[in-house]
Length: 305
Image 1 (cartoon, rainbow, N blue to C red):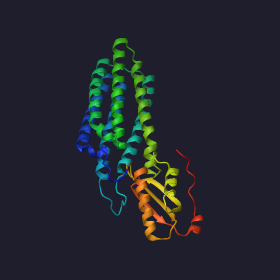
Image 2: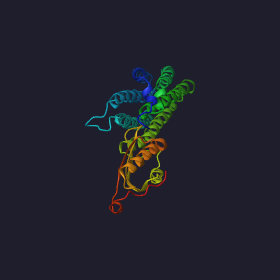
Image 3: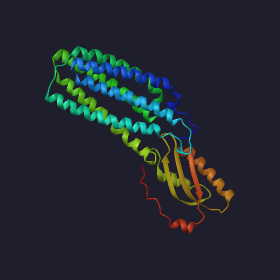
Image 4: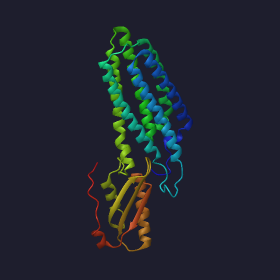
């Protein structure tokens, strides 16, 4: 997307994020206390998930502030990747929490503890209300921000987890089915791991400068080659500057050896890249030494996505 686009995350005030963090931290403390008092591992599992949400929102807020800094001599492309770095930290922590919950579930299965059902139901009911409210607060910014989207999905999953904990507490109250607490813990852990592993690849690819997922490399090469005045091209590189801005550089062999003609070719190429592929930053260099270009290293063929 071009730099001139207005993204949903920017339209959401930082105050909403601050309140979402405060609410989730308070909920985390309440759930941990409730889990200790009731002996419910599922409630503590849900609390840890909520804490990861609070940390995620806090890092997202901090990263947004850094990301607004203008480009300088140190970061010539700007600080937009700060939020992607925060996402990587959040997701890595989320995966660690997921595995920790699985280990705790196995340990609790081998050494069962008494569980108080009413405490589980009451605290999980409060958590459900808070999770839905928090998800509503961050929903506006979840459309165009990886960090905010992850936080939103976490809150939605937290709401589902709270429903699961309520079900477990009800089964304990009615049927003394204590194993339901362990089952819900495993389900919560599995969902946490699913979220972490589903978003990690995109985050890592952004940091490694990979071609964006929704961009077809060969299609861009063909589109550039079809521009009038381009005889051939090579050394094409496409990467994401940050989550919303793409960049491209390429060597073009012009049909006419004229500076004015090549300037027109570059203008057509940049307009096409912006309109068709949302690439707002393109560096296009003229290569007049066609024979030399033929001996330069070529990019490997990119399979169509």
